[in-house]
Length: 232
Length: 232
DNA sequence: ATCCAAAGTTAGGCAAGACGAATTCAGGAG
DNA sequence: CTCCTGAATTCGTCTTGCCTAACTTTGGAT
Ligand SMILES: [Mn+2]
Ligand SMILES: [Mn+2]
Ligand SMILES: [Mn+2]
Ligand SMILES: [Mn+2]
Image 1 (tube, chains in turn blue, cyan, yellow, purple):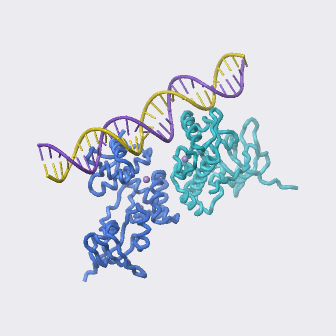
Image 2: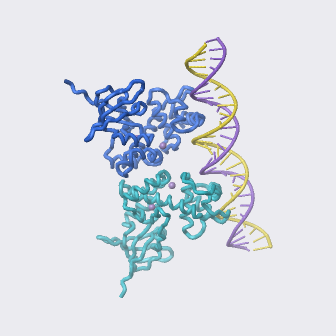
Image 3: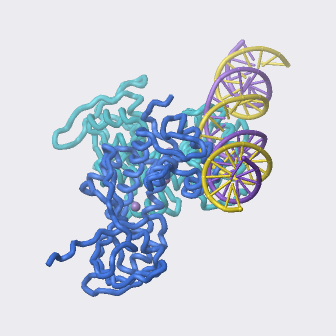
């Protein structure tokens, strides 16, 4: 029963796998309560599902110690992530969605689309490598880029950096970021950083550069790459 | 509890409502076993669901007598039908699907898409009135054209007719029809009709007219409109 | 008027997923 | 080493949707 049939998993299972993939990407096993939070279910529901996922061979489950995806589970999770991100990209570029509304739509569609549909969308888009929030899109082979971005809070004052990726789960945050001109690809200079988890001041480049203040909490989740220093 | 909350119905309920709508369109109430056949479930499953649908106010249920949709149920069913047909149209014209594969994909997606997505697809298509199989697409207001088509088996020999609509549930049948050049819009002349449910011979118009023989069973489900007779 | 077959319903179960309440474990503080 | 606390699990229950087996009902044939 642990073998991988192709017959499509339930919506619940797919969402659990995706949540576990994301949580374990922090480096540590995914904890029950973190999964519960992420999926908005109660911890006992998670315990129950973990047992089923483990019996089905998707996770390595050591009670009280958290869970890690097996190779099969990781494959399955990455497949959903690919679907999600292709869908987001398609909805934005072909159907006029905004970057703050694509996530919810993709969250449901990812469980209903066929592989064929996803590949047709990918082709129509020219096989994009990043979704609208800058997240890398796994390949059909199940490979995913592991970007080595640095948080805005870790960029020294005076450096130029480019915004590469932002979390896509909170529409309000995305709308706010848009008003600051902070979308992936935006370039900026760090003007100042206040101590004790204080705000970061940046100057966003563009035809009309704008100075903005970004709170620490927000800045922590803005993933950037530093632009090469001019070498004397 | 019979009031119409917006919170989206389950996939099962939506498919039941759609099946009932189609069956009752024959003029008589939808029978339990017909619903069971249509959804590939056992009759007791239908009885159970009918009770729930009736309590929820979607159908008028008189045990042993079949069911009819209430106004609320009809509204809900037509909404799913709209989704299904817009999806089919979109998949064909924007994503290169063939007319024999769109149905299955739409059958799953119809339960996952938002109203907004459907309306964006409809807009991108220029608000089509018919789906790829010639079926009329309900409006957002819940109106649907009641076409007065006639079956190919009822068209007199010698008459010219246009194919308007074909059933979309059997991919093989659709592929076969395509090889005959029989898609909605095709025009043809009825050459002969054999008695005792025998085949119908037609000449399909086009740059290179082709004579075809269509079995009675198939001919019965090809919905056509007769082209005006030349008068005097 | 009776009987029968087909259609439909009821009864009883099962699996998936969720919940709250009660219990158990693990790891840190003392 | 013991105790406490927060995290996790177990337990019992619910809902949805499906099934088979057993039953009722219906309506036509005799
Ligand atoms: Mn999802
Ligand atoms: Mn995203
Ligand atoms: Mn469906
Ligand atoms: Mn169709």
